[in-house]
Length: 163
Image 1: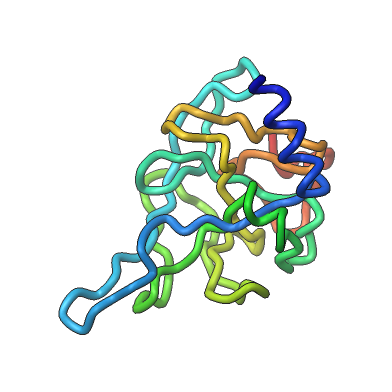
Image 2: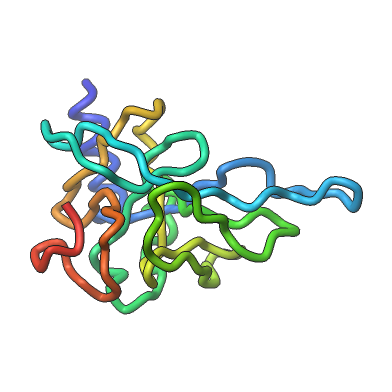
């Protein structure tokens, strides 16, 4: 049943990506939103222990190979399965946590809001990942990969850009 659910998500997305709000997008004048934290964690990815980027809650972050030009290409149904890591209203930049050696930045998301990037790659979650140890999105459709701290701008997974 789980495999069927993944297959349906891949088909609905065209192997695509998505957007994920790491929390409420509302902010108040008295309570500024916290910047999303990107840090590293060691997880089992495809049977191997690897250091990858995660959010402040430990959820795995992914990149989408078609985004190699630094543009968000995962929209619509794709964004349901692959939610983007977005900035909260009232924040201007993401925060680098332990182990982050690359450049965090932002890019406008075509469906609204601001998406966090790592070395120019837009960052996403995978909707099937529910716990901090999950890396179910690794390799999905041959286009989705967990983010290695050494992911270089514009690289492809076959060129050593990811795992």
